[in-house]
Image (cartoon, rainbow, N blue to C red; front, side, top):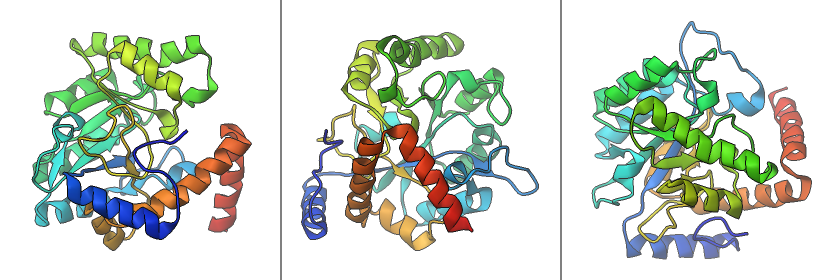
Length: 283
């Protein structure tokens, strides 16, 4: 299955396709963040496969300042789906970590940016994650909340009844907590299948975000929104290039290779192999 508006191919062909598509209409890069690391605060999870997605508070602040100084707007998913002409990025956070409120939100407010925080409902009130009151406070500050499933499984690996629980039931649960409709969903691990998309449509979600490396435009299927994972070791120059929609073709090409391997091994085996390789790399 092809995830998104681009097909895999040779690198130069991908670059040409990306450039031509970008000139045709407004493209917006959706940034995907997770927890932030605070000085003097011990991380509860330090395994390499998780830690690589944890940025320091200082790094996140530097990135938001660069965006502000470069004239970018920071948008929520609902705002980004209007595809304004002004230079913009969409800022998203997955999982519902406590640092969303105590670290990310103040930095975003200082920059005058909005964002969408995707909540895993089963994580609420657990260590290092938002409580229900903290989640409501995050929304009261003007930020958008979306759904990130109930228990964070890889959705293609579960049964139809479990899939309904992770999408439809999680949406209902979150809406009951907030008192209004929740319109946007992001897939745990960025992984999905056609069942996931169909279930999300039936549940009433307006969009589904994954973790495929492509920018989005009005031509993008809103149920296949690509997002670019922000990694711990990403240089500022690379961050700037990605926000300007440069170099995504190379990351997409690499991601296609990983997806091929994952389809061959399966999600769990792939994660085990990746964990070993990451530990070897750290060593």
